[in-house]
Length: 318
Ligand code: UDP
Ligand code: MG
Image 1 (spheres, rainbow, N blue to C red):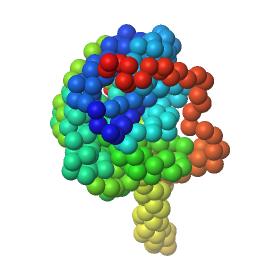
Image 2: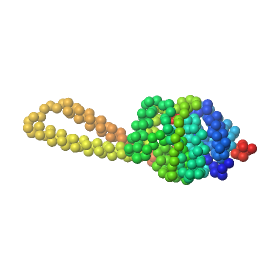
Image 3: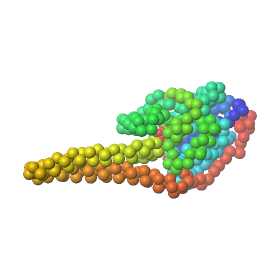
Image 4: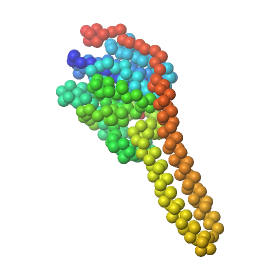
């Protein structure tokens, strides 16, 4: 076994049917590769038997820390809970459904140990079987994010190895609404990436509804850029310019005695200005809601229970 410890941080939500087996598969791969590891499994308020399964894992496997959140706080919050509890020399963040292939972890560890990378990211070489709307939505989202923030996250996933110093830097980022993928890119450090194929989920279906994805996209964009707010000002300036021209024209017509009733123009202008004002208010409102969320300074998650392994790694191998 290596002299270092890898924390494997996994958020788990309603995965009772597969979690026991999946963690055992990951455990087996890591043990075969002599990687000294601990599991940090966070039950994100599951409504099935996930917590019982996590407790079973903490009895059967060494070095498991299972954390139960008081309700479903969402994957980002569950990830925060896992990262905050990790105390390995490096931390591997991954999904519980084996869509992030654990076979890659030994390679990540090698690049971290031998080549001195601080962050080794799994990058999706294909998006797997996803609906057309999800694929188009993801593409659109990443291109907007890239233009607004300068970070190209296309293909980025939450499957990453982070050195403990990167985790420490991540911990001092205080925001309540987190976007792990973007925040870890923002941190910088020496980075490498490994492409991987997204395989089918072994059991159940994705927990991300289109609405949840849309909310995450809004969090990501508003955390990384205030450009939408500046667009509101730009739009205002454009309208001011148009209104000056139209104002001069209208006055000219009036003085020449050519003014006509102009009903259509008035209605169209009202509609355009009305909807633009509404959109602008909406954009400002989104940022204010974000500020409101942040200033409340509520914890990102609440832990209701914990379970730890009694077994040590040594007993298990022996
Ligand atoms: N997950 C979570 N809380 C949620 C939704 C998902 O902890 O509210 C976990 C889930 O158990 C899995 C990971 O986040 O380990 C990724 O979820 P999923 O496989 O549903 O997402 P996808 O692979 O479709 O992106
Ligand atoms: Mg998945």
